[in-house]
Amino acid sequence: MAPPDHTATTATSTLCKVLDWDERQVWQRVQEAEGVEPCIVHQADWIAGLLHGEWRVTDYNNALKLGYDPAAECYPDWLCDQPFACLLPLAVVAPGAPVAPITSAVAQQTGLPEGCLVCGGTTDSIAAFVAAGVTEVGEAVTSLGSTLAVKLLSETRVDDARYGLYSHRLGSAWLVGGASNTGGAVLRQFFSDAQLAELTPRLDAGRPTGLDYYPLTRPGERCPINDPDLQPRLEPRPADDALFLQGMLEGIARIEAQTYQLLAQQGASPVCRVYTAGGGARNPAWAAIRQRQLGVPVVASEQAEAAYGSALLAKQGYELANPVIALVM
Ligand SMILES: Nc1ncnc2c1ncn2[C@@H]1O[C@H](COP(=O)(O)OP(=O)(O)O)[C@@H](O)[C@H]1O
Ligand SMILES: O=C(CO)[C@H](O)[C@H](O)COP(=O)(O)O
Image 1 (cartoon, rainbow, N blue to C red):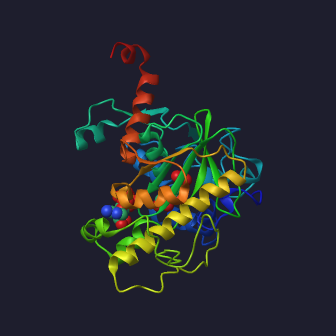
Image 2 (image 1 turned 180 degrees about the vertical axis):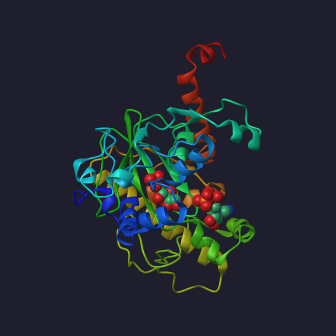
Image 3 (image 1 turned 45 degrees about the horizontal axis):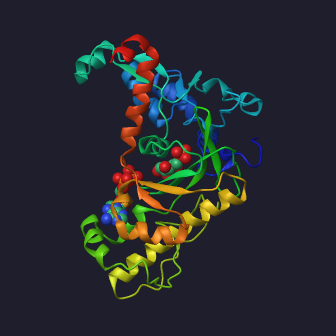
């Protein structure tokens, strides 16, 4: 039902989950079992709903993979024509836009101040992007968490579901990129964080291992190859654990570099610097391996936690809602 290059057509999109629930008549079962009117909420909407009690509000970042059009600021006709359209969030706000204060019951339960304002959310890797404070076109943030997410500030949009590439709107800018299923979760399958820290000084970015890994925890990839059946490649495993780890980090760096190369080929603004967020940002040897692959400076974000970016968005929302007080502060 969606245009062929749209990110909502990928197997892991929100829209595909909704279609699956629709087919399995989940709405009807929710209504019967809970006695409530069903509606679609993203994880962030669920948390926010628990705080302010508004269940039909989302933001245009979370709604992208549902099919929302952030440029036109509306649901497209092909989505409105679906039988489940009545379950879509009724309001789609900008990330950081003021939504509603917490309820009195929540203020009492949590100790948060009465009237504490809840603002529109965003996705985890966009929050990491905001935390990094990037403002220049061509600058990018790679989130090395359980998975790998790439976000580049670009003057032009890129949307190509064949490679899992899509564009998020942030204010008047476009964050182009994609998310791979590779990342820290694969490392954790083999090593604890303590072992990672212990092995890291033995890695040598200047001496590539020659291993050709595609690290995944299980079959299936989203970007830069969109293939739900893509197999992990983690063999042969050398006897030396440091060599094995370096081979995996090189493999993940190749996936990251391929994503940035594809973005350039598809007309995104050229990448000039990559900031790093997430648990992988604490590994200097990995940064050196990535810099060789990417060919641009790789630097750790000063604020590498996505939560910091969420707080910055909330501050923006507070200032919008209280312009005079914010000016005095
Ligand atoms: N020294 C290290 N080198 C590389 N990766 C690391 C290191 N320490 C932790 N990690 C990885 O960081 C990941 C956790 O990062 P985090 O940003 O908390 O992930 P999440 O996406 O789950 O929030 C783990 O999967 C782990 O493998
Ligand atoms: O895999 C992830 C979380 O586990 C990625 O962070 C996520 O898929 C990226 O999505 P978006 O680009 O919409 O922020």
